[in-house]
Amino acid sequence: MPLSEYEQRVLEQMERALTSDDPRLANTFHAPRRRSVLRYVLAGAGVVGGLLLLVLGAATSQTWLGVVGFVLMFAGVVLVFQSPRGARKGPVGTVGADGRVRPSAPKKQAARQPFLSRLEERWERRREQGGR
Image 1 (cartoon, rainbow, N blue to C red):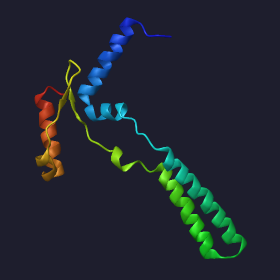
Image 2 (cartoon, rainbow, N blue to C red; image 1 turned 90 degrees about the vertical axis):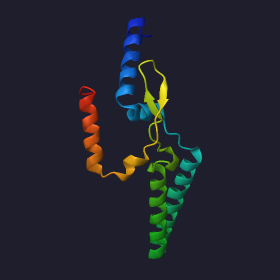
Image 3 (cartoon, rainbow, N blue to C red; image 1 turned 180 degrees about the vertical axis):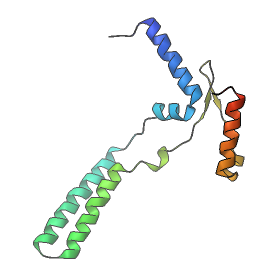
């Protein structure tokens, strides 16, 4: 069932408000992570191969072969659940009320400041903006 025009407008307003309040969260929702099929195939092969080595090691009483099989199985499971390295990006910029994205300036200075002083600066900025 399609949304009415009023519901679509309200939804768009809520989306703009969320994007302007927390651009990092909005970027997280809009940028889905794609995992390659090859990753799943390799992980599945690792788990199956590790299980075979584990059973073979137990059947022949060779402990080292069972341990190698277990490590291979564990590595396959970790490969499936580990997030891709290139997928972690920060926010691209801030979204204005008109819906346009303004690129944010690089903050080299913030990385050198201590954590508490950065929190204090953010707190002061929020107080100056009226409690946003």
